[in-house]
Length: 234
Image 1 (cartoon, helix red, strand yellow):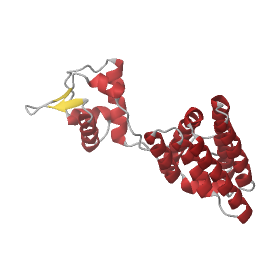
Image 2 (cartoon, rainbow, N blue to C red):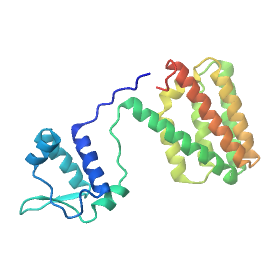
Image 3 (cartoon, rainbow, N blue to C red):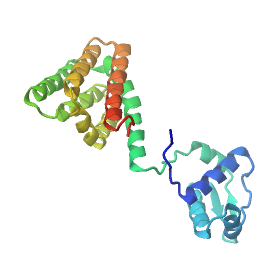
Image 4 (cartoon, rainbow, N blue to C red):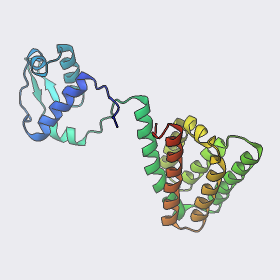
């Protein structure tokens, strides 16, 4: 019914308002800004918050402070705002959701690419992770090593070192949650079945099916995470 309350830093709110004014054209390149005191009064905040916001915008090349006095918008401030990739300041739980979403989008595409590039050795490696997970299932182990290696081997099959490195990073950052989801009743057995089907799609060079299976694989994990959190993803 209700949405969670998010705390946003005052300086971030100032930055957002100023960026909005620049994008809308209400603030123009080369325009002189009011003084810190005047801005503080207009925003209804402290001078320290205004100063922090201006410092951040200056570091991004959006504005500049002249030695003779005054703060001005840079000539190409609009272009810099449009091209900037801002890393949002979010609580850990929200950052986790962003990370998981990024992993899903990324690895679905990776699976499709592996279909066209995997060689016999790659297929042998992926198949070996299936054997490892079968062993974990028999012996009651967590299966986390087999799970992590399965995805890393698929990434390696793309023959792209950057992709392999990113997937390895995802594996390390999300390891704790993966341990929890694999421990969910019946999940390890189902995960093995999903991995086996994905492997077969890669072996058969069926990119479309492989991407669909990988998406379903992530959807299944998302449902388990939701169940573990009382109907919420996190």
